[in-house]
Length: 197
Image (cartoon, rainbow, N blue to C red; front, side, top):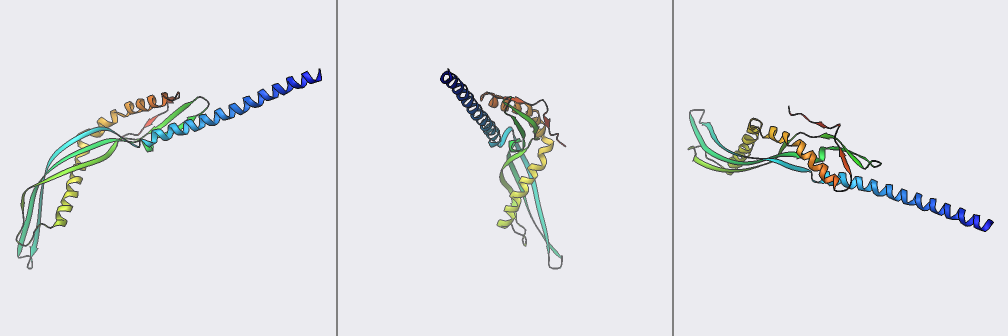
């Protein structure tokens, strides 16, 4: 009788012990899975949603005075700037919280779109040196930088940032699908999307 009771009690304790161990192991796996999911989303980092092409003409003139400002010498050039601009989201800035119990990822903050890359190709036309004011290699380097800044200044009025802002929800839905493939769900009911100034 006592032997039978001991065996039953031992079996029950073993069952509880194994169940508790499996439960703890499962909780650890879920926590690891949530961390992996969040890292997977953030590792995408920069997501391009809009691409824009620019073709602009930039007039450059530089006048230098010599010999007590008696003689002036002017160099000038016309630049044709072709540029490709990529607008998108820096996903490393999003804020995510994991609820391991419900297997839910909460998205609380999503950044505004920004310029991710600007690739420029510059062609020079009507490049003329002044007699005492000639183009140097350093001038061309500076002009290339100025041409890139010229394009960046044109971006706000192009409407590309507004178009990318409309893509924010599509990006959130893409993240949701990514999370759902792992058996989790995305909660974005408290989401704040940063407004463009």
